[in-house]
Length: 170
Length: 194
Figure 1: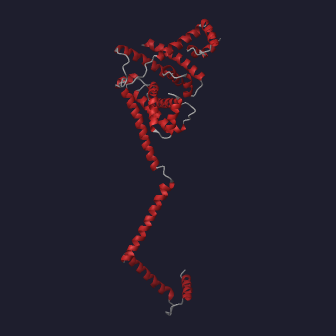
Figure 2: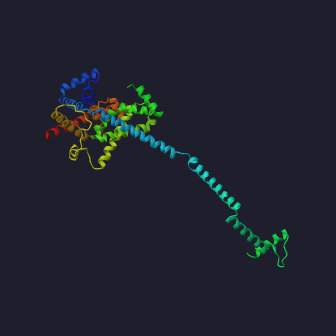
Figure 3: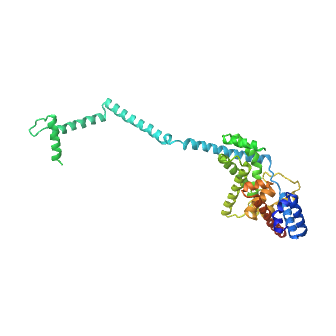
């Protein structure tokens, strides 16, 4: 057996985890090779030292605290997740379309209600409407429906006159 | 604990059973803390790492494949947390954890530690010995350090270490051998100096 092979199996040999044929070969090698014997000694020494390193021992109060800390972090994570899912993980319909449609419908309802109340009570907008409609009528009579001699056109003549009026004013 | 029971716990956690998760925490907490403490060398940091690892497990439990052992998966997460935290610590300036620095700023490293020995002098010698050993381990390359902590100090099985670190058993043994050699040299030098 060569040193390289011995060193490759040094850890299982040290822990008696090699088969009997390999063990006898390694035993024979170590009895002759001082270098490998030294390596085995080093490995054993360090393993002994490390196996005797002080174990981490804490009292019950410490473990309870650590357990509660982990539990609290987990509960905190759950709370954050629930909030996230309820606020941000909504569908597009629930998040945007639904509120937009509700808002729009409500706006339209308010708009019509305002004008309904205004017209019923004869308020500002009704007066403006009357004023506007009156002006329209005046304009209509002044500019389109009367001829130069003051006669009112029939429906077909009025249309012809309106078209010619538009063309003359282009 | 039998793997069957553990798998049942994990199945329940996947279904949203928080009590099953708390039970899993109770099973793994002590050893996880011990492993984290070997890496971080500081009580608060070790606790933070354990918390981080458990929360990562809780968040990613759906990704865990039950055909592989939970233990290996969990300790892989924990060790990765510790290694990342150590890298962050290195970047922020303090290359290696120093006990002297803690003594200077008055950190009490005995909080929560049970008195193993009654003789204070013996206790002091034991602590000093541990300090030198852990300093030596911290000076090892990361790959050898992982194996030495898990195998020689924490007593993990070679196969388990191979699963945790995702390396063949042959590599575990060679890292163990070279790590022990380097540590021996360091310890001899440190003992001569002291």
